[in-house]
Length: 205
Image 1 (cartoon, rainbow, N blue to C red):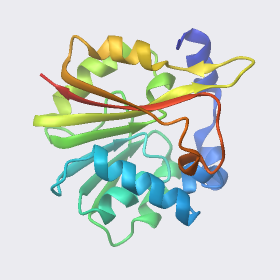
Image 2: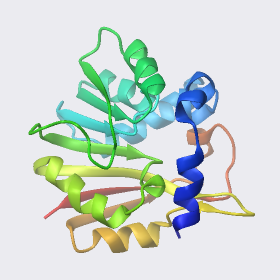
Image 3: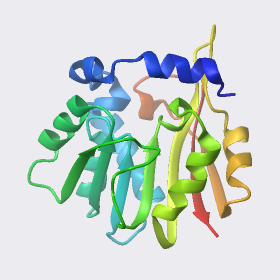
Image 4: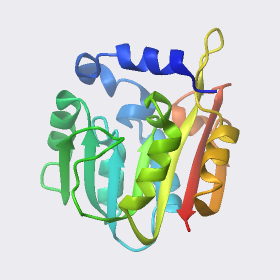
């Protein structure tokens, strides 16, 4: 379960300092063709079939943003780290994509609304996940969806948010909630993993 120690751990991370080496992780940089194909296939199944507007919160260096753009979507990425945003802009140069420096909990998108809000490995870092999950549906157009990729990492001092807790938080907000377990698909991570990794696709009421 996510708790204050999780948030403290996340808040101590210097994401600007992490930016240069961030893509070295197989599931961050998607440099391996098999890993890239695995994420592209999952993303295609989670995002709307027709090209639409996708908000990628905590976009990091823009690897998932790039996959979404390649699938025809118009992408707006938001990250708190200026260095991450600079990397994302470089990665998607010439694409139909905009990247903004800002807080995923309160993204600086004004009145713009989206067909999907995509969030990977971010929710557990935020101080009040319940409040954030009440806000994010307000960023969606009618019929839009939340795509949340989360997990629990580490055996000694695990951090993260279990699927059971996330689905409980979403229950009052979403008419449709689908959970996909991802731990068993080593092609997503570039190796076998034993911890809890999953995606939730939710369509708010």
